[in-house]
Image (cartoon, rainbow, N blue to C red; front, side, top):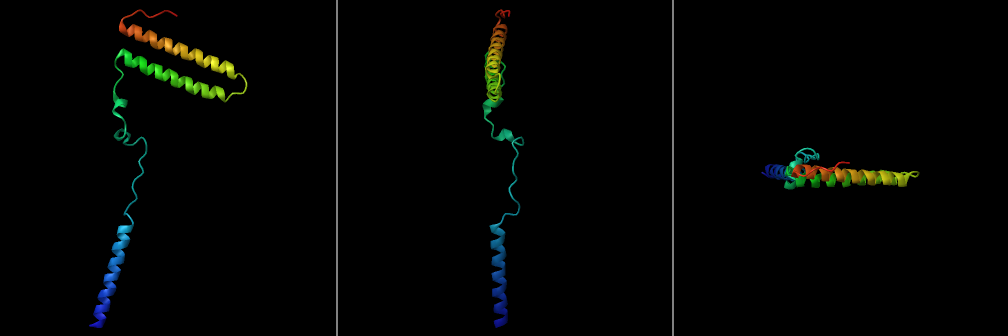
Length: 116
């Protein structure tokens, strides 16, 4: 009787250890989600609103023009020689981009596009 009780206690202790080890460690680590995979789950709804009106298209072009200016200025600041010329060219490009956006807005609204 003593031997069977000792065996039962040992089996119960082993089962408890196995259960604790199983619960302590997950079977598989959670998958790391890449930004491009299932990204739409966390995206704001405004990202998927189409720019289908002339005003929305204009606003998008203005944002893109300013973003392009930021990138150009970042590259200009890295230059040692010709930095001021580079900044002047970047600002001139911004003015052209904004003029193009205004012209497109006027053309889509039925106004006459200015001639450059």
